[in-house]
Image (cartoon, rainbow, N blue to C red; front, top):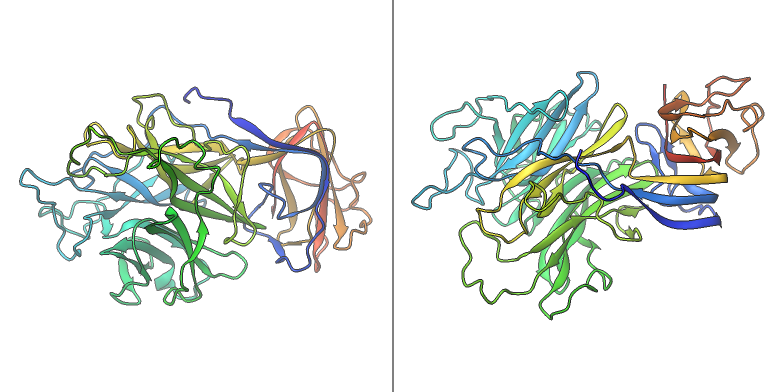
Length: 494
């Protein structure tokens, strides 16, 4: 791993705090998604704990870099990654950008439409580090189908939709082309077709992230709007059927604190894109914060492929209970630190995958890394893909001293056992179950609980009389007594 700044930053101290449960807040289902403690959206009260934000660990070398003609000199993880636990294999949809030839012409793929020339590419991996580019035989590039090209889109965001009863629409994609956003569907993630036809589903075009509301099943599209009085910003559009989308609502933009660094009139901060990940009580967002530099008087021309807008981009973390209104973390640190100058990610982190994956005891997010600032010429600018790593669900923790107490809002427990992800080595955590109104449940008190005194990402809670079986049929609260320990997440499972 690369050496870097300390990997965690305390966000604030709250020795005694209580947040009354709001009846109008949506219910929390603890099932496939964990409850993360990134904010108080899942917490009824807490005391004696601090919230700590953890920076990613990164690697000294990229996990993928351009090496094939249809990838050009730039590959991007404007795309998505999924982990198949049964097969113990990862699938990656990423983007290639073929270079122009000596005459200034960009190679074309028969059947692909005119646009930026970006291509959706597919790769697989067993360990998330060594990636294979299968020869799919689907599309011809310079006379050969021996490639991993699957579609033509810019910023392809892929959703594995387990709710849709139609198996031909198991995979869904949103991306941009020809000045608008288009949709596509696939049964296997490899063979794609336009959906519902060859018409755009949303206006304007650039970067987009597709996700799904875990409670309602609604599709959520976080897409960048053209620069306006806010500069680059992100809007949200919603859909129930993946065909008809709501008018964009402004969801996230730079504020006055983001602009505080600027010294000149033409310096500013913008939001380049936003990737959003749901959890049991809300959403976390990873926006890329773009500090746009002023015009350089010596920059008399922009070379082919060079962006006219220069500056440094970093990734931060934000949180939301509803996916529309976002809260900032304080301090606003880089969640994924850039590497040393001259390294593959030493210049800018352009964006992150639209999904994160959880493999054994770790959580991974893939990111697009630049060797230079955003607007540098090519060369020396090069793009590659890196991997940011955390402990499983380890973006944020609640850290307790001698007497910490955390009580959740009522949870609908969707599994047979309660799972705690925490580091209690040198301390302990005990769990109690309460009725939704706060009444204790006999046999499920903290005194009945077998304490966690280890560092575990998947510790199954047990009570002396009832074992690990959970009461069924109604929402319950979880109360955690903590001593010298660090709590990351709660989930249900086996």
